[in-house]
Image (cartoon, rainbow over all chains, first blue to last red; front, top):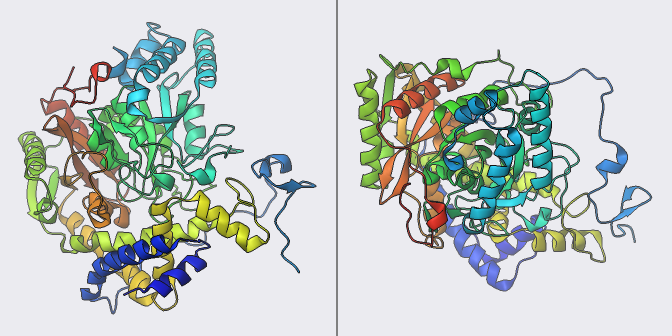
Length: 94
Length: 493
């Protein structure tokens, strides 16, 4: 069971602010879902390897050489806050 | 009649100069203009660019340049695929203003093939959902009955093809998002094997599951589009290097001796008996053509949805962490950085997206990781083994695509009921297998889809079987009569 306080904490981890009503809804809904997925506990998986990826690919690398990339002005064109060609964010340091 | 036109037929007319790409594009734009107020498939229509591209294709053709079969063919892209210079929203307020600086590989490939982009289609926000009711902008209506959902998340793409607005469209499929709307809208939809088609430039939902695939009016059209899409892409590290295949060459009509497994778990009590009957009838057609069928069991099927609803949200919660208001998309100003992140995300993301981010974060949290996320990954191994066992005996598996036909908008309110939409499709996704949905009949005038699941990279086999069925099923290819639609269930032409 997930509690009201855990949902508040979870929202904070997800960088989300949710209203008191939403907390209540999410608590109920998440509990329903968790109760449903709980049936996985019935499965015996002691010696089973977890599947991270269905493909046998590992460490796909390319040669370390300079390739064409996005020009600076295109790379920053989608931000609404820019200063001297850089992304501007609120002050982080006191 | 434009609305019924397949790629194959249009390409023939273009090659014989019976029609120009410009005229074809004009016809598509006219159809969109006439019908999209009702269907609401498109978020963006790229009229000017489309006419310009079409004119260029015509010019090349006049100059005798050798053009591919898709040259001049109108296409639409699900709005989670980046299109250079063209708004790409993911149907989210978070990306309401996002203009990508580059195109997805699949978009580039179709551009090189000469296809004409008509616009970007609606989806559930960030492809999360199965009805487009989670779109931040509007819900797409099923062309067969405007009161009903088109399915999702690629609902806009499936509805646009079904309504005859474009000749084909691309969708993405994570747990059924190409196949389910294709079934609901009576069109053909293929989710390729994981790794066959590049995801570069496609906004990620669940990286170990997402695949791009075509939505078309016929199996042959599907094969034609796959001939262009199935290419190795060095920019996607999950893209597999294979020899180039000619999928149309596999459409021989021959299914004699093909072994079809029918997993009994996909015909259980959760499936509408009328859907089951339609799918069984389709199986009979394949048997009459010489295929051999046998019932099998995939005992892990009941764990598919629990595994899917842990893995997909876990990966989603990580993928959507990038939306923070700094580099692109929606931003809500605040005094400090963390407050800016929180305000931006809280205002920019929809409820279902938030719910799944929280579910995924919970499954990944230190206390819960072993019980939920790791457990799901192990169960995923077992699910794949289930399929491997079946494929040791059979060449392909045949199931319904969806438990029922399309439902009335707003009717499904319970989350778990909505999640069961993926019951028949999520298994092939978790196992990374190719699967196609093909129309196989009607229930109350609404289309039913049959799903064929193949071995890894055996797209040619499922296309061959799907094509043989389509050519011999005796089903009239119906089209919804959009022009007379007044909201009542529509009849065929």
